[in-house]
Image 1 (tube, rainbow, N blue to C red):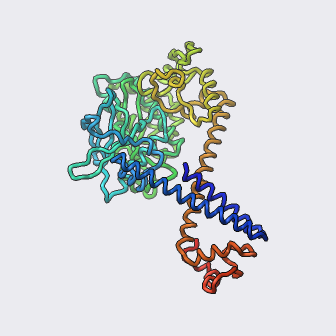
Image 2 (cartoon, one colour; image 1 turned 30 degrees about the horizontal axis):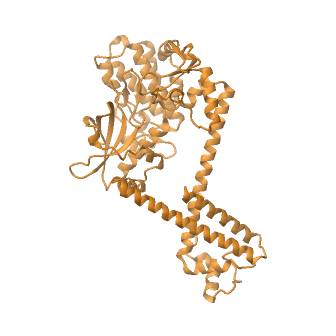
Image 3 (cartoon, rainbow, N blue to C red; image 1 turned 30 degrees about the vertical axis):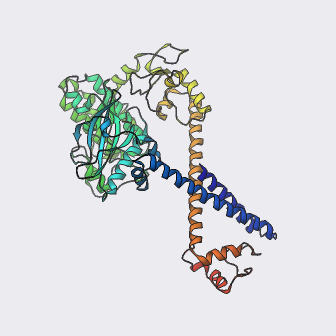
Length: 506
């Protein structure tokens, strides 16, 4: 807030100062006035930074966990995760019980309750000597927060967990609890799905994989144990701790070692080959194959065998993409039958009966999903874009505050299917404008930080400070390279003459 405003004012003054010198103005008074403004702006930045330090100190005094949180932020915690931090809750608030411990001891999973609602907690130990473990937590939480898809497990919060007996700090990721557990447990349990329900569950996961790949993410560990199922039979893709973001790729060695044997594509065993969307599709094919082996032969068909064959072919170039695989005949009956199911539009004035294919259903995690017909969806999108909202959410909770709807935003792919081309183009145009504004703000912040660092470097060198002060009154306007210093000492002149060799200069 105040710090950013002060930095903006500082930057404006700096630019005017430079323009004045560059134009070689004859008026020394004008240059001196701008120099005074620059000095005041610097003082404003310093005062704002001091106020920020005071605010941090106040937070530390009121919240015992804040010093640890601040330390984790200094160790690379993304700013986007700060709103997720639950400093008011601890392990004892949920009365947790251990559900699962990963085979490689990366984490443990607990079930707990709060306010009558069940949650799952993915708990990581954070050794002081292993900062990579902390980066794994931040990476997975950031991916889950950014991806936002109806079939991807959402992250609900982050909190400190009770330290281990050896004093190791632990951090927990708060997630929804899925009643049927892992997909492999569901198909073998008492409430096992029929063939159509299994196809729908696999199709949801495949749509989530398509969304991942469209977003530049490779999951790297698709298998039945990393797919969870809720009480309604809806499937969710989980465990993103070794996933790869195309913008920050990890090494092949790490992802190859941490993948699950039996689901690794053959090309990963060859030198130089790293995870790709095609390797995810191979793992998904092996997942389908493994699940079909767990159920009766009646679940198997020529379509399922063909799907597995296409996904697990040895040459990765011959495998279909996730989006293409969604249209395989194995899923056609399930998708087609579901699309014909009747629905009632949740928008009050409408309340008409439609087929599911004629609108969009949200991903409400607290109960039944809400359906919105295409016409109402179009009007809702127009209203949201006029309000400068970047992403479109289910309108039910806004129209009826008493209605509980906890769902993620509609994906671009879902909106593209249900909006008219002109409407979708307006939506994407608004998204692009908001993205451009975000980029500009980020660039401005980077420039302000670079300016701050430059000023710090200049302040480190006494002679550079003298040269800077004297250069304000030069007539030629070539700052830092002119020997016509007004009142400068011989030492200062010699230093400016060799300014290229000053170690404090950028």
